[in-house]
Image (cartoon, rainbow, N blue to C red; front, side, top):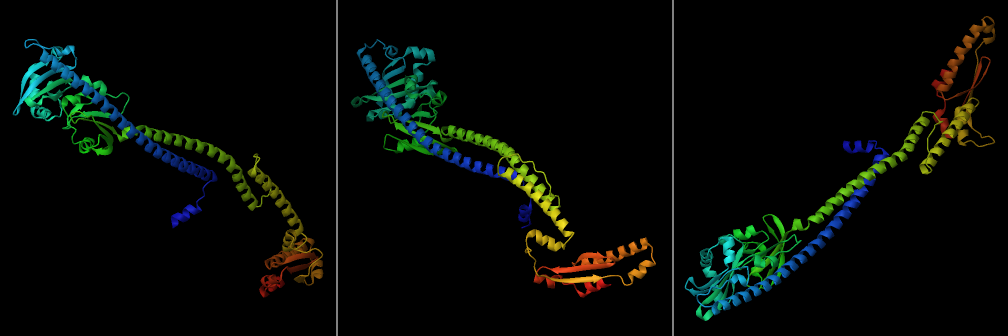
Length: 472
């Protein structure tokens, strides 16, 4: 309670109030504008990002589907060439496609794959220092997966961890009734151009049916052979029967916007993910810039309002000082007002009022020398009717007994001293009882008590003590 009273009684300059009000209005207004604009811009940006992400996966999925179809045609063409060639003649697949590493015909026998005929790209083997056994070892590792091709579905696996170069292998049925299938090992560069997206902030990943990475912007991740099956967007893709879709999910404390597209080959799929914070980074940058602009604007407003308020409050402060001067009886005050507005008019009117009060005080002093002080005050206020007015009053006459005989035996100085002492005491007694000394007649005094209103008779009627004071 004391704190509230302290704040209420505390003097706060007008200029600070103006600064506070203007700054508060600007802060609230601009904050609301920034918040609303950011909110709707964020919603719109998020919608566009989701649409763009879905378009990216659809486009990449379509390109990869076409690429894998082309690969299958190429593989079948080379297999036909291999069958047409004589047994001793080795088919160099490099002349058909520089990205094919090896193409082989295998027979499935129990849990093993028996190679019947294999053609290699000697150029790639030389450059990468790979051997035929390196490729064969990788094929045997994924035997169980490749054998699924005999069920009529192609299979796609990442060979990068074993071969130490970005590569993948596909298996397709060849002669199912004989248990034959074709396995082709292919350099990742074959599909890299179809997979990459320029100028996109999203991260696009190609995974096989087991969630193993086949394609990624970072080839180190491909070589490591990372698995993304537990990634929410990958789980969503494999759990849905539809070909594409999108979700917003959290992973390791970060929110992502994800889209997926099934390629339509070997149950593989393309997922495109983007961090929500990164996607909306420009929105937050704009918000921060708007806040900086708001702070700069507030500082400008502070400076402008401070100087403007200073010009306004300076005349008001002068008026306040002038009011104090008038309160102390100094009516002639000087106020420097140069503004042609209400403040300037008020300052001029205040000076004129001071002149008027000064003239009124002079008239009052002059009138008080001849009439009762209260009557003079009421006359100046216009409370006395012209033409005379009947009033109640008390008139008192007093002189010094035997003054004439006494003064004959006294020197002039002694007479003056006696009169001064006597009249001083008498005047004090009259003033004490709200009376008025009307005149001095030699050694006599005439005093009056005038009551302008009936109620004043009871309030100001001289008491017995006052009368005795005067008489004594």
